[in-house]
Image 1 (cartoon, rainbow, N blue to C red):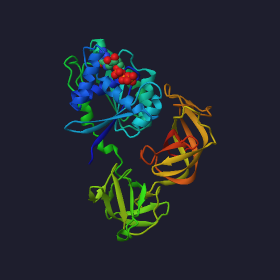
Image 2 (spheres, protein in one colour):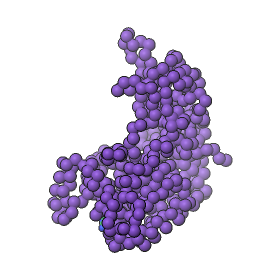
Image 3 (cartoon, rainbow, N blue to C red):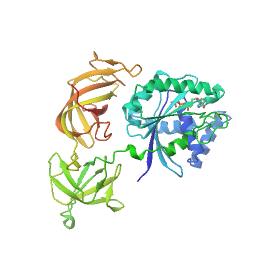
Image 4 (tube, rainbow, N blue to C red):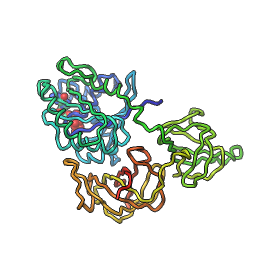
Length: 419
Ligand SMILES: Nc1nc2c(ncn2[C@@H]2O[C@H](COP(=O)(O)OP(=O)(O)OP(=O)(O)O)[C@@H](O)[C@H]2O)c(=O)[nH]1
């Protein structure tokens, strides 16, 4: 199985996120020498007597910031055990939107807490968003341990406060690691300055966390991205459906049903740029050929006949509002995209807005502003094939796009209907 483990990071400004990521890359020897030279030169130029690893990710981020609105920098690194992609989400402005972008596909979230500041409003917000986005594993790095003399009591106090808040959320797996990102304690190598800590350093936790079983390999969902139909005479009869497996394991010979038509067939072949396969699983990009010539178009969904998502035009969802230009206005029409399918949607009701610090639900709210999270009801113009987000992060999520500006204004997570 392609084992790319996705990590999302979160932390308030100056908690040390960039330094931690730099340290992970540096100490695990995942850096290219030319990048290292550049960082060392830049550090010297600034008069630092140490190599400022934050320059590494900050530099990257600056590159990414040009011309894109959602500035999440992705960094790949590998150890002999695992390959990782780490999303570095800036802690300052727009944190909710950036975190939603960075964490919606993450296997593991790493939240930084400055041990001197303790569990702040932002830490609570990060924990809440992590669970809202269904990230299965949460690792809290209690950073800057060097500034509290590597005190066990200081570490334990943060763990206690964080656990108390997390107990009110749906956290599946919570781990704490005391680190000093600056000095490298417990990041890649075990720290000798914290003999009281019996756990493993961060990297080793990331390498050993069991993530495969978190992925949905049960419910086959294959959203069709393109229909491939060559026009040449030699390939006249060829018809393939290209897309990315959203969940489940698709096998040659399996019966499938196409939605919305409801026609059934069997998988005749699974093709990739590197040759044919007998099975495909998420997030593989493949072309599927069917035994019968049934009507399948872009935006349709292939699944198993005995395991289909619900077809719905009324959606209940939690959404995060991401548009700084205008608040969410009920009854306004937006474009909606779920997997590869587009339609139009109208928010018919804002049920409540959630205060992420207190988890209080404000049922009097009738709009959502930038970074607000709320529960809403939507009505779509065409049927969508949906699962609850808790069962399927791919088919349970959607975005709303403002058609006049073409901006993504919301990310949504579908929930079961409630009255
Ligand atoms: N003493 C000490 N300082 C640290 C540690 N980790 C980071 N710092 C310092 O804290 C400051 C902020 O670190 P960054 O890594 O830039 O913080 P950040 O969270 O990435 O901040 P943004 O990039 O602005 O989101 C820098 O001056 C770091 O050198 C640590 O473990 N100990």
